[in-house]
Amino acid sequence: MRKAFALIISLVLIFICVPGCSKKIKDIDKPEEPVTLEQVNTDGRYVARAYLESIFSNNRELFVRCYLDGFIDRIEKKSGKNVFEEYKTSLTSISATVTGTASNDYREYTVENGFDAASMRSGISFLTGLNYSDIEQIQLQKITVFFKNGEETANSDFYYVVYKTGGKWYMLESYDGKMKF
Image (cartoon, rainbow, N blue to C red; front, side):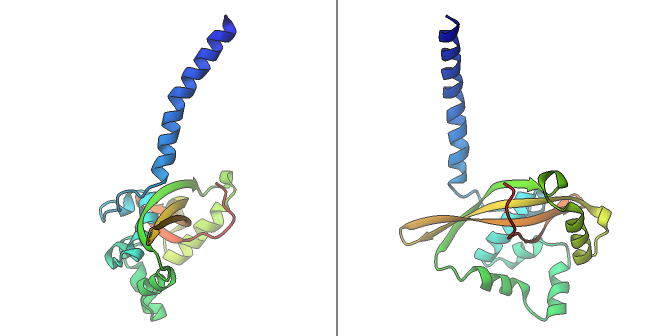
């Protein structure tokens, strides 16, 4: 009797959990609604998605919003190059059309997760001019980009380091190290 009861409970739990699990998997298989200017700095996933969406949609205003106020202007003045155009050139050489992005996963950029958080915090501080203590949080975002080329569709994952300061999230850089997901 106990075995039958345990089997029934197990089956009920499986039928309850599987639809919930499959829904989460399906959500990753399609793009999310585009990030709005109002959303960009409210969450790490939005700023990373907005960065990619800005480049693929040729939206400089969205791109600039991904960075601290004045940061892009300082970089452009120092380098003599249009940063937005440089990034666009590097990412838009893809012959497919981008149909959207989705936030796939993230990791807190902490020692507990295997990252050198102190060095990253120092790097952000050096690059942006922020005080070390002003950097509230650092995350590694995994963003899926969806492509279409004729009738064929595909997706690819991109990884970005984002950080929070003053209650807002900003882009730092792409991440090409070994993933800890």
